Length: 296
Image (cartoon, rainbow, N blue to C red; front, top):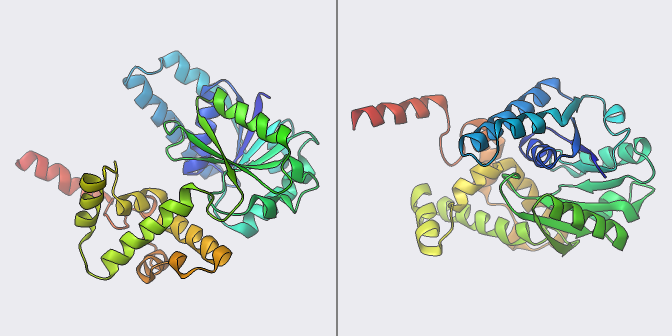
């Protein structure tokens, strides 16, 4: 199983492509946008450069990794020879169902179809295919090349053979696979997203400021990153989508998104990807930080 197609060249998609390619899989990276593919490849190259600088890989390793990736804007062409497909498109159920319906039509009969979804039902995704026993969740953590965990989610009809195959592939990528059942948010986001949402509520209610909330969680709870900074890193739109899926799935008010989070997403304040979220990541802010460094 050496031909792997990755759908989506965004943050998760390019990280997944990077990881497979680094472990010598032939990767077909697919996106509807050529500019997104170009950005994805540039990100992979930049991340590999960091690894070379830290001497964790050689320049030859970097070049080999990049040579293992081929890009496509045509889904049918990209998955023609894939043994495994990992879908990493936007966290939108309608979009994912459309993609999996197309994958079922375009992929060879023995291709395993995996989704990197962080909250959407694998059973629902599998229902639009003729191979539900070969559909599975393969939820990587961001940044993919560094984080060890892969949540492997079995849908109602996912076969043991499919699970064992994906488990073994995860181990070959030097990841730690954890079996999870198919419920909204799975494990990681079922626990993480209410914490992030509560941090947003704490800010919304005026209990403390952004940096104060994050400092309490970092210094008091030994979290490497505060929940509001983490939300910026994940993408506030992604956090909102996951909370909505869990709220719809459980009908429990504890998963209802904070109004502040909703408003920030509507205003386009999505975190790092938009240049501003709970923190400011704009170029002007970077210039201000550099100026302060020279003044000190």
